[in-house]
Length: 263
Image (cartoon, rainbow, N blue to C red; front, side, top):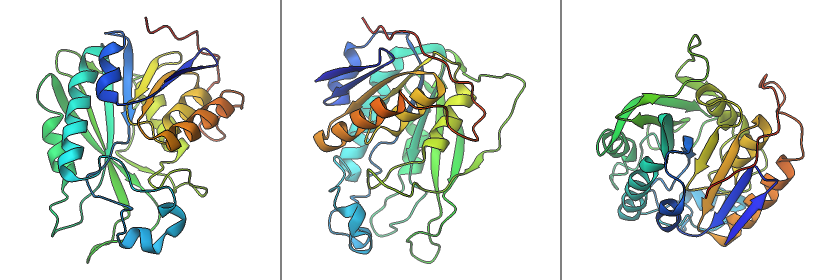
């Protein structure tokens, strides 16, 4: 299923491993995505017991270690031909935990993002400004792993600017997805590494937060989501965001992005 929203966004319901090869090569400035972490969250675990309001969204698809590595590795391979020479790939992942289940996806992801045409650049920390679950050291952060095409450069909107590698934004108050990220965090990453009207892609769209941030910052967007429930939520959120003013406090100039052409 393919839906065009306000000419500047296109979303697909399906498997990103099937859809990514159909998109136009060399057209994407940024991949910003929040894939499964390989933690098997919300499948009757302690997290779902303590947070039933999140558990109602159901288990995350492809969230075992084996499935996560298969789909994330496949996504990186299929996304690379789509990237411009100067581009960024930002992938959320967990900061550890699960010592008895070997859930150290951040180490695997950093190594995977440094081979097969990619070059690993940065590990950015999202400070969630709240204390989560954990054994001994409790979780209060997640990673955003940053890479770029090995034959190109890491995109950066203002070459004279810098940013701390710890970005502090509270978790969303009203969750549309059990692992939803703040729109403001995604907007900050998008603003740092892309220009207005650039194309941003999210192969694991979830509830559409990256798309909402793109609509609110004047970027074009392509999103892909396998889960029908999350796809419908994302469609509604992105449609609504395309009609709303810019995000408060982000200091981004809103502009209407040009028509999205993927053919």
